[in-house]
Amino acid sequence: MEITKEEKQLMLKIVRNSIAEIFEPAEELKIDKEKYPALKKKCGAFVTLTINKMLRGCVGYIVSDRPLIELLPIVAKKSAQEDTRFTPLEKNELNEISIEISILSEPFKMNSYDDIVVGKHGLILSERYNRGLLLPQVPKEHGMDKEGFLTALCQKAGLPPYEWKKKTLNIEMFTAAVFSEREEYEHNT
Image (cartoon, rainbow, N blue to C red; front, side, top):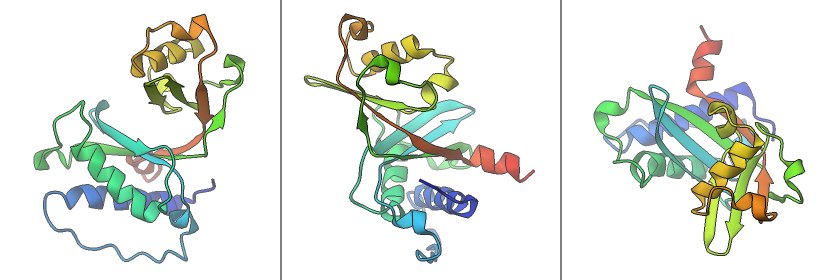
């Protein structure tokens, strides 16, 4: 999906504003949806929060029947308050967080591990009752090759780390448009 620089900046503003609303009423953003077509798209999205480059929350939906303008505030608040790996974000952390947004393509079936392009594809593993997802940027951020990516995916899904070596697992792939406040800041300085 094509997302303009203006749309990225607006989405980041929507997310930050939504998180701020957890702590006190924020000014409502006036958005002309016709001017920003990406906000009307119905697709999956994840919001990742970090403090000093350390994960502080990451929640999202693989697919959605809501347009992004409705989905992003929901995902933002869940990332800040409902990621079970962390305590809810506190008001004093609001100015410390860095926001990254991942807008997902529709998932598609992986036929072979050879299909995976590290840094391009996110992975969704579904085996029996186990399920795990890793965004496309995860292996690059953690210096993983394809084997490390598949091992981490198995661990995320609660499977033995090398389960992927025993058989071809049921994996779907997706791509994502990934952007962050950090990038926007770097481009504007």
